[in-house]
Image (tube, rainbow over all chains, first blue to last red; front, side, top):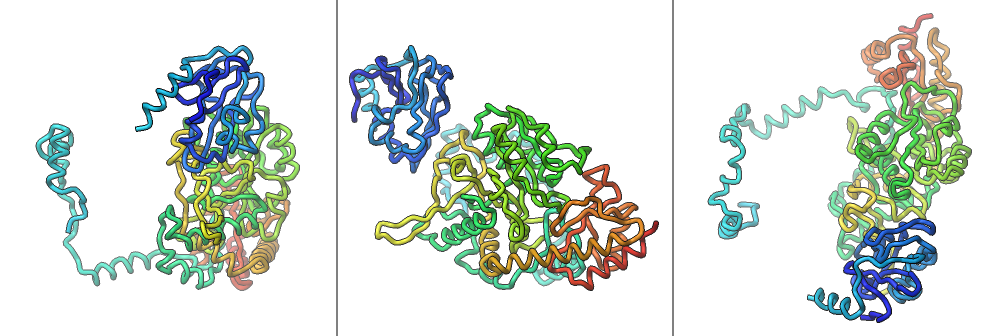
Length: 125
Length: 450
């Protein structure tokens, strides 16, 4: 499981990058969902989002999940490329798989990488 | 032999867990006298007696097989080749259950895939689901699709008053509590202004416009312009279409419709006194994730052989729960098969021939009937196999007279449209011979007056 140390994590398996304001779905989450076939972003540039509110709906071959905002703030950009290439959520969840970028985003209830790893391990059983 | 899977031991364990002694304790809230009420039933009879009694009851019905029928209004009397029923009743197909397991359901899955392909070809659309209950519920699912697409950012649906009145009623039922606004659904509306008038109601809050093709009065309009105008406003357009008509006229797909739905009954399904029936549902690929219902896809198995599976199932309600477009994903598997068999049997040119026969016979009937004194066609627009006829007197009285002569008359339009009191909707299909049409004209001539 890949858990970059520079990111913050939520209990609902989203990440937030305080440096860039980007957020998305964690490596753990993409592994649980398996092959992701469809992503619908529920917000657009100019919207304001609140931590904990849904920003995307993700469908894999076997499951469907909502992705919630890991931070609050104004949406500066959304990843338009996901519509045609949702598989990057599996292959590159912290890079090309970013979903929404905030301007001056304030993280909600988040953990650091070590805490999140421990949290995920606790769910493996 | 008992069909209850729990052993007495298991039952006792469950009772103990919830803290009651006996099963009866669970029913304490029901007053004792209502638990096993005495049913006032006649004494038991033999199978032979029961068959005779039921046969007698069934014989009291009058069917389109025994009588001459000019009744349509959503259900149509078409010829069904006997092969359709023969294939339906094969043991391999005769189940209504959804084929979850592709390993044991290739035949059923392929049949549904063929159905989807045929419906897509007929409507000119890109994707069809594995069907809904009937045309009305399929139309209501179009509202659900638009609702899911706009996620509450648009909340208005504009429905033409010339969409089938019962479809409009089902849409109202389905959308209760969704806090959306239904506009245009008005029985008092001017029925002669043409489809573009609907645009007066279409605004930036409109998510969907629904029209019918041919409309409830059988009229054929090219909705291309309406669809373009609605798209300019950012709204989607759903066309409720009669599948037989699509063999003859421009498809709603060609007109640019986003969703095309309709009643599949004309495609090889008996009228059965009103159902069960088949709702077809088609849309564009870009809306497929918002489409309700089951979807069969073609793929290859681990040996590279062609295989069929239920696909894109994560959008369905058993996985997506309350976020799914619809809480219904049941389909009419057997009746979808019936229509696939029917369409395969008659083929492209055969279906066109059926549609042409309907068209020409309806036009012959309309021409003859409009010559009768005090009678006339209500509308001047082109029509398919159904038309509104003014009979100048109460329709129920006219129909009672027709029935005395073994003819089922048309639908009483005054029930739904007060302005069309004394008008009936007459449907003519390939099943009506020239002699039958002439008989209709003759009997109506007896009651016609200036």
